[in-house]
Length: 258
Image 1 (cartoon, rainbow, N blue to C red):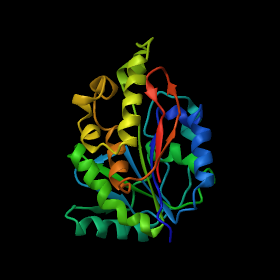
Image 2 (cartoon, one colour):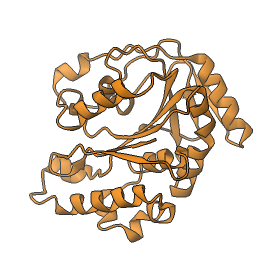
Image 3 (tube, rainbow, N blue to C red):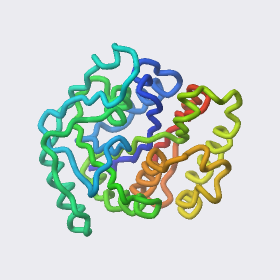
Image 4 (spheres, rainbow, N blue to C red):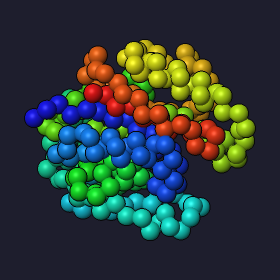
């Protein structure tokens, strides 16, 4: 079986499910042209646990883990099947590398998972398993977790790490930014660092990136990028999916690691 690529996807606000903008069509085209995966493993910052957990439901629910948005969002469903067998293999793989992993048969897919997957695989016909982000994760830990997941790519599993390339929720909610120049500066920096596979720069973004702390006041939506980069093959080609900015501050840029 061919080695599957790795995708870092910016999922932005929940309204991305209704407002595809530039990023939605790009993700739809990407899903259509990739080799069909046996399953998708998705990691999202909207499921953080003490230690890693993995969904093992045969039919995971669609979780609407947000508030204050249009009613139509809460009626959207993404009825993709789960794959308990993959959940078991994933747990065993990580346990063999020292991670304390457990399975959750009741957990569904949060919006960081199902919103981008609605564009990648709109028919919801590819099995999906979600892995939580452990609360202790830092930059090096995220990269190491991604590297630990690499063997799944040989089994036809598409790894999708879902976050946001910039994620300042205060400015998003307050509509406080008229000039998003800082967000564009951070995106330009990140794009080059990703293309260069510059682990040192990417893991130390708060000290070396322009406006790193303003782009990410908290690390949760940035760490999936490091998981994706860690899961990618060293020296892999990187395809940039330019999704632009939404709401002035949220970058929708995504990266496909071939």
